[in-house]
Length: 201
Image 1 (cartoon, rainbow, N blue to C red):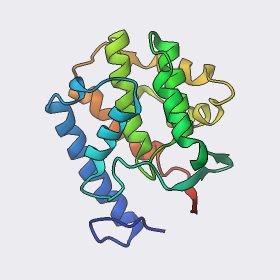
Image 2: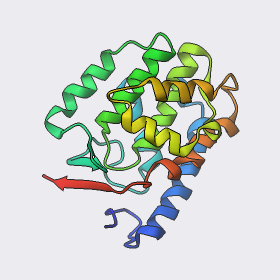
Image 3: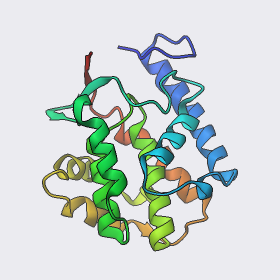
């Protein structure tokens, strides 16, 4: 099923290519404009801003909380009836060190607030928190896609694996556009790897 989009594309593969091209261009603009450094870190509102900027030329729902329940494989993301409360809880979570930041990242992944594009937006969001609080970011090219997916699937009950994987990929090259863009370049390893199941309400 192809998501309804502003580009008028009804072929899933073509939409994926255009989405990748446009979101990479927008991500680069977001970095080069300095906008990211002006955003508050660790809250849902800056994640909305990031998502809206990346996808506003593609989807009407850019930056908007999803209106469907989502599942990936056997895992169900936060049900809509609890989503607002989950996001409010995440806003209040501490983020003073690496462990707390990754715990917040895991909770945001469980919330999965958007219909599409959560992974790309959340990796930028995570790196902004890490940059502000620890002076480091993740070099996503050093993150094995299989290990990452398995660790994220298990993270709601055991987050030690994802913490180990991300800690091993930390770098202090926080101003490097190349490092930043690797999170976007690798997005299609992490998103779309397993199709989403949706329940329209």
